[in-house]
Length: 218
Ligand SMILES: C[S@@+](CC[C@H](N)C(=O)[O-])C[C@H]1O[C@@H](n2cnc3c(N)ncnc32)[C@H](O)[C@@H]1O
Image 1 (cartoon, rainbow, N blue to C red):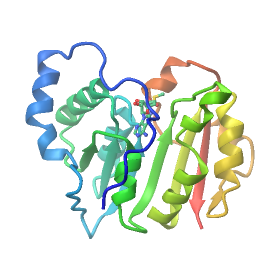
Image 2 (cartoon, rainbow, N blue to C red; image 1 turned 90 degrees about the vertical axis):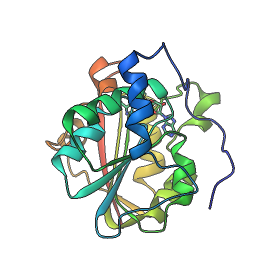
Image 3 (spheres, helix red, strand yellow; image 1 turned 180 degrees about the vertical axis):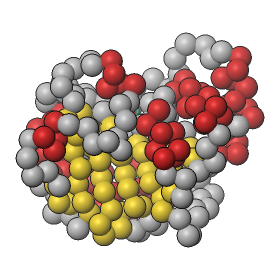
Image 4 (spheres, rainbow, N blue to C red; image 1 turned 120 degrees about the horizontal axis):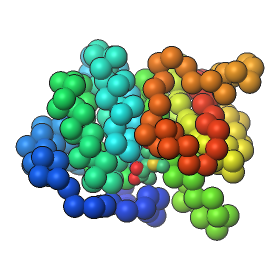
Protein backbone atom coordinates (compact mmCIF):
# COMPACT_ATOMS: atom_id res chain seq x y z
CA UNK A 1 0.00 0.00 0.00
CA UNK A 2 1.36 3.48 -0.77
CA UNK A 3 0.08 6.73 0.67
CA UNK A 4 -0.74 9.86 -1.28
CA UNK A 5 2.13 12.33 -1.03
CA UNK A 6 1.38 14.35 2.12
CA UNK A 7 2.12 18.06 2.71
CA UNK A 8 5.88 18.54 3.01
CA UNK A 9 7.07 18.87 6.60
CA UNK A 10 10.81 19.16 6.08
CA UNK A 11 13.05 21.89 4.72
CA UNK A 12 15.78 21.14 2.16
CA UNK A 13 16.36 17.73 0.58
CA UNK A 14 19.89 18.66 -0.53
CA UNK A 15 22.56 20.95 0.88
CA UNK A 16 26.12 21.58 -0.21
CA UNK A 17 27.83 19.33 -2.74
CA UNK A 18 28.69 15.91 -1.33
CA UNK A 19 32.32 14.83 -0.94
CA UNK A 20 33.37 12.11 -3.37
CA UNK A 21 33.42 9.47 -0.61
CA UNK A 22 29.89 10.41 0.48
CA UNK A 23 28.58 10.33 -3.09
CA UNK A 24 30.19 6.95 -3.54
CA UNK A 25 28.47 5.55 -0.41
CA UNK A 26 25.12 6.65 -1.83
CA UNK A 27 25.91 4.58 -4.92
CA UNK A 28 27.45 1.54 -3.26
CA UNK A 29 26.17 1.12 0.32
CA UNK A 30 22.72 2.71 0.20
CA UNK A 31 21.20 0.18 -2.25
CA UNK A 32 21.91 -2.61 0.28
CA UNK A 33 20.07 -0.81 3.08
CA UNK A 34 17.39 1.21 1.40
CA UNK A 35 13.68 0.54 1.72
CA UNK A 36 12.04 1.41 -1.60
CA UNK A 37 8.29 1.26 -1.46
CA UNK A 38 6.15 -0.55 -2.36
CA UNK A 39 8.68 -3.34 -1.59
CA UNK A 40 8.78 -3.78 2.17
CA UNK A 41 10.32 -6.92 3.61
CA UNK A 42 10.69 -6.80 7.36
CA UNK A 43 12.34 -9.38 9.58
CA UNK A 44 9.68 -11.43 11.39
CA UNK A 45 11.78 -12.62 14.32
CA UNK A 46 13.35 -9.33 15.43
CA UNK A 47 12.12 -6.19 17.13
CA UNK A 48 11.86 -3.20 14.80
CA UNK A 49 12.60 0.33 15.97
CA UNK A 50 11.80 3.42 13.87
CA UNK A 51 13.63 6.77 13.96
CA UNK A 52 11.92 9.67 12.21
CA UNK A 53 14.24 12.44 10.96
CA UNK A 54 17.58 10.91 11.99
CA UNK A 55 19.55 13.95 10.78
CA UNK A 56 23.15 12.75 10.39
CA UNK A 57 22.38 9.40 12.04
CA UNK A 58 24.47 9.50 15.24
CA UNK A 59 21.60 8.36 17.43
CA UNK A 60 20.40 5.78 14.90
CA UNK A 61 23.80 4.14 14.52
CA UNK A 62 24.51 4.28 18.27
CA UNK A 63 21.23 2.44 18.94
CA UNK A 64 22.08 -0.10 16.21
CA UNK A 65 25.47 -0.77 17.79
CA UNK A 66 24.01 -1.12 21.29
CA UNK A 67 21.10 -3.29 20.16
CA UNK A 68 22.38 -5.79 17.59
CA UNK A 69 19.26 -7.96 17.94
CA UNK A 70 17.01 -5.09 16.84
CA UNK A 71 16.45 -3.83 13.29
CA UNK A 72 16.57 -0.03 13.18
CA UNK A 73 14.70 1.76 10.39
CA UNK A 74 15.76 5.37 9.94
CA UNK A 75 13.79 7.89 7.86
CA UNK A 76 15.38 11.08 6.57
CA UNK A 77 14.74 12.98 3.34
CA UNK A 78 17.84 15.25 3.65
CA UNK A 79 20.41 13.61 1.40
CA UNK A 80 23.47 15.22 3.01
CA UNK A 81 22.38 13.77 6.37
CA UNK A 82 21.85 10.38 4.75
CA UNK A 83 25.39 10.52 3.31
CA UNK A 84 26.83 11.27 6.78
CA UNK A 85 24.80 8.42 8.26
CA UNK A 86 26.13 6.03 5.60
CA UNK A 87 29.67 7.00 6.64
CA UNK A 88 28.84 6.14 10.27
CA UNK A 89 27.25 2.85 9.22
CA UNK A 90 30.31 1.91 7.19
CA UNK A 91 32.80 2.84 9.92
CA UNK A 92 30.85 1.10 12.69
CA UNK A 93 30.15 -2.03 10.65
CA UNK A 94 26.54 -2.29 11.89
CA UNK A 95 24.37 -4.60 9.81
CA UNK A 96 21.00 -3.93 11.43
CA UNK A 97 20.06 -0.56 9.91
CA UNK A 98 17.63 0.07 7.04
CA UNK A 99 17.08 3.53 5.57
CA UNK A 100 14.05 5.20 4.04
CA UNK A 101 15.07 8.35 2.18
CA UNK A 102 11.81 10.22 2.17
CA UNK A 103 8.99 11.48 4.34
CA UNK A 104 8.54 9.04 7.23
CA UNK A 105 4.76 9.24 6.85
CA UNK A 106 4.96 7.43 3.49
CA UNK A 107 6.71 4.50 5.16
CA UNK A 108 4.41 4.63 8.17
CA UNK A 109 1.41 4.27 5.86
CA UNK A 110 2.93 1.02 4.54
CA UNK A 111 4.04 -0.57 7.82
CA UNK A 112 1.86 -3.30 9.33
CA UNK A 113 -0.12 -2.76 12.52
CA UNK A 114 1.79 -3.52 15.73
CA UNK A 115 5.09 -3.88 13.89
CA UNK A 116 7.17 -1.43 15.96
CA UNK A 117 8.68 -2.00 19.39
CA UNK A 118 10.10 1.51 19.70
CA UNK A 119 9.89 4.83 17.87
CA UNK A 120 12.02 7.98 18.13
CA UNK A 121 11.16 11.51 17.01
CA UNK A 122 14.11 13.53 18.29
CA UNK A 123 14.26 17.29 17.89
CA UNK A 124 11.79 17.45 15.01
CA UNK A 125 11.80 20.71 13.03
CA UNK A 126 10.11 23.14 15.44
CA UNK A 127 8.16 25.28 12.94
CA UNK A 128 7.78 27.96 15.64
CA UNK A 129 5.45 30.34 13.74
CA UNK A 130 1.81 29.70 14.51
CA UNK A 131 0.86 29.55 10.85
CA UNK A 132 3.41 26.72 10.39
CA UNK A 133 2.31 24.57 13.32
CA UNK A 134 0.40 22.31 10.92
CA UNK A 135 3.80 21.30 9.48
CA UNK A 136 4.99 19.88 12.80
CA UNK A 137 5.57 16.15 12.70
CA UNK A 138 3.90 15.63 16.07
CA UNK A 139 0.21 15.94 15.22
CA UNK A 140 -2.88 14.07 16.23
CA UNK A 141 -2.93 12.13 12.93
CA UNK A 142 0.75 11.04 13.04
CA UNK A 143 0.29 9.99 16.67
CA UNK A 144 -2.80 7.99 15.70
CA UNK A 145 -0.73 6.23 13.03
CA UNK A 146 2.15 5.58 15.47
CA UNK A 147 -0.40 4.19 17.93
CA UNK A 148 -1.56 1.76 15.23
CA UNK A 149 2.00 0.73 14.36
CA UNK A 150 3.33 0.29 17.88
CA UNK A 151 2.97 -2.88 19.92
CA UNK A 152 1.37 -2.60 23.36
CA UNK A 153 4.16 -1.68 25.77
CA UNK A 154 6.31 -0.18 22.98
CA UNK A 155 8.09 3.06 23.82
CA UNK A 156 7.79 6.36 21.96
CA UNK A 157 10.62 8.80 22.61
CA UNK A 158 10.23 12.48 21.78
CA UNK A 159 12.65 15.34 22.37
CA UNK A 160 12.63 19.06 21.76
CA UNK A 161 14.52 22.14 22.86
CA UNK A 162 11.95 24.51 21.41
CA UNK A 163 9.95 26.40 24.05
CA UNK A 164 6.77 26.34 21.97
CA UNK A 165 7.05 22.75 20.71
CA UNK A 166 7.30 21.42 24.26
CA UNK A 167 3.77 22.42 25.36
CA UNK A 168 2.56 21.25 21.93
CA UNK A 169 4.10 17.80 22.53
CA UNK A 170 2.63 17.68 26.02
CA UNK A 171 -0.79 18.62 24.68
CA UNK A 172 -0.80 16.28 21.69
CA UNK A 173 1.33 13.30 22.71
CA UNK A 174 1.27 13.11 26.50
CA UNK A 175 -2.52 13.35 26.60
CA UNK A 176 -3.10 11.00 23.65
CA UNK A 177 -5.33 8.18 24.85
CA UNK A 178 -3.14 5.47 23.29
CA UNK A 179 -0.03 6.58 25.18
CA UNK A 180 1.00 6.89 28.81
CA UNK A 181 3.64 9.48 29.68
CA UNK A 182 6.23 7.71 31.81
CA UNK A 183 7.48 10.74 33.77
CA UNK A 184 7.00 10.78 37.52
CA UNK A 185 9.23 13.71 38.48
CA UNK A 186 10.94 16.64 36.68
CA UNK A 187 14.26 14.77 36.52
CA UNK A 188 12.53 12.28 34.22
CA UNK A 189 12.06 14.83 31.45
CA UNK A 190 15.03 17.09 32.20
CA UNK A 191 17.70 14.39 32.20
CA UNK A 192 18.62 12.24 29.23
CA UNK A 193 18.44 8.50 30.00
CA UNK A 194 21.73 6.59 29.71
CA UNK A 195 20.53 4.79 26.58
CA UNK A 196 19.71 8.05 24.80
CA UNK A 197 22.83 9.65 23.28
CA UNK A 198 23.02 13.30 22.27
CA UNK A 199 22.01 14.06 18.72
CA UNK A 200 23.89 16.52 16.52
CA UNK A 201 21.00 18.97 16.70
CA UNK A 202 20.95 18.80 20.50
CA UNK A 203 24.69 19.45 20.66
CA UNK A 204 24.20 22.68 18.75
CA UNK A 205 21.92 23.97 21.55
CA UNK A 206 19.87 25.92 19.02
CA UNK A 207 16.77 26.91 20.95
CA UNK A 208 16.98 26.14 24.65
CA UNK A 209 17.04 23.37 27.21
CA UNK A 210 16.30 19.91 25.85
CA UNK A 211 13.35 17.95 27.18
CA UNK A 212 13.16 14.16 26.90
CA UNK A 213 9.73 12.55 26.79
CA UNK A 214 9.19 8.80 27.12
CA UNK A 215 5.71 7.42 26.46
CA UNK A 216 4.42 3.89 26.56
CA UNK A 217 1.91 2.52 24.06
CA UNK A 218 -1.00 1.26 26.16
C1 LIG B 1 15.92 19.59 13.48
S1 LIG B 1 16.45 18.21 12.55
C2 LIG B 1 16.92 17.05 13.83
C3 LIG B 1 17.72 15.89 13.30
C4 LIG B 1 18.12 14.84 14.33
N1 LIG B 1 16.96 14.16 14.87
C5 LIG B 1 18.94 15.47 15.43
O1 LIG B 1 18.40 15.62 16.55
O2 LIG B 1 20.11 15.81 15.19
C6 LIG B 1 14.91 17.50 11.99
C7 LIG B 1 15.11 16.47 10.89
O3 LIG B 1 13.88 15.86 10.58
C8 LIG B 1 13.83 15.64 9.19
N2 LIG B 1 12.40 15.53 8.84
C9 LIG B 1 11.48 16.53 8.81
N3 LIG B 1 10.29 16.06 8.44
C10 LIG B 1 10.44 14.73 8.25
C11 LIG B 1 9.56 13.68 7.84
N4 LIG B 1 8.28 13.95 7.58
N5 LIG B 1 10.06 12.44 7.72
C12 LIG B 1 11.36 12.19 7.99
N6 LIG B 1 12.23 13.14 8.38
C13 LIG B 1 11.78 14.38 8.51
C14 LIG B 1 14.54 16.84 8.60
O4 LIG B 1 15.03 16.60 7.29
C15 LIG B 1 15.66 17.06 9.60
O5 LIG B 1 16.83 16.37 9.25
